[in-house]
Length: 408
Image 1 (cartoon, one colour):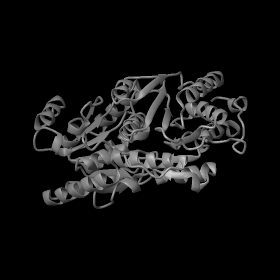
Image 2 (cartoon, one colour):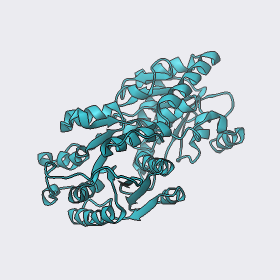
Image 3 (tube, helix red, strand yellow):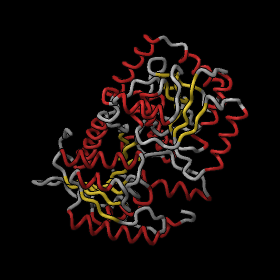
C-alpha cells in the first residue's frame, strides 16, 4: 500500500473476537488464501498442504486469482475459488473480505490460513466477523521501508494470526525483532521439498545427457551452477568476480534462470564476463524445466545472494541431489547447510571468500565428494521433506482447534 490504507480497514479487536469451537463429528475445513497459483515456494507449499489435508481426511479449499497450478490442486481433490486476492486496493480488500466471509459461512471453514499480505488483510477481516480461526505464514522479511512506518503496518498483518508459522528460525527472529511478535505464538515450520522428484536415483542418464547437449558442455570439466532468476541480489556478479579471482579455465559455470524482462542486468553480466575473460567459462542459460537433471549435471551449486534468504530452497534441493553447496552466511543458510560437511559458508558479497570456497571444492577427492553427498542427502531427507513440512503444519492446525495432534 502506497499510503495509510490500513486506516480504512477496521475490524473488532482481538479481545472481542469469539473463536469458533473445535469441530465435532466432521472433518475440519481449512481455507488457504494467497495472491495466485503461478509458481514459487509459497504456491508450492500451498498445493502440498492441500494434498496433505486431503490425505488426512480434512477438507481443503484454496482461494486465489488462479494460475497453472490450479489443475494440480483440483486433481488432488481440493477446491479452488477464484478471487482477486493479489490486489492491494483497500476497496478490493474489503470486497474480498465480504466474499471470504460468505465462503467461511457457506463451507463451514474452521481455519483460514493466509500466506501473503494483501490476502491476509481480507482473511483477517473475515475471520474477525465469523469467529473463524486465523493462521498466517511469514514467508519473508518483506520491505520495511516507507513513510511514517506505513509499510510496517501493512506487513504487520502477518503477525495477527493465532499462530504465526515462520519458514525458518531466521524469519521467526525477524518477526520478533521488527514486529514485537510474541514468541509463544510463533511456530517454525521449514519449507519442504518433494523427495520423489529430487532423488538422484530417479534421474535417468538420458535426461542428463539431453541437458549437457543443450548447454553444450564439454566432457572433463567440473560444472558449477548458480540457479536463480537474473536479479541483482541473487549475486551472479559476485560469482563471476570469484571465478576471475580463481583464474581457472578448466571449469564451467552455469547461471540458470530467466531475466524476467531484466534485459539490462543480463547485458551487464554478459559484459562483465567479457571483461573478466570468462567467455569460455560462464554461460547464461534461460530457466530450466528439469532442475533435478540440472543438479545431477552439476558438480557444485552456488547461492551467492547478497540479501538474506528467508529459507533457501536451492541449497536444500542441491543437497537432496547429493551436491555440495556454497552459500552466503546470512539468512537461513545456517539452518539448511552443515558447514564443512555438506558445503561451505562465505561472506555475503565477498568475491574472494567465494573464490576460496570454490578452490576448496575443486581440491576435493572423489571419495570426499561421495562422503559429502551421502551426508547431504540424509540431512535433507531427515529435515526438509514436504511430508515433514505438512505434518508440522497440520500439528499447528490441530493446536489451534484444540485437537490431539494428527499425522499426515
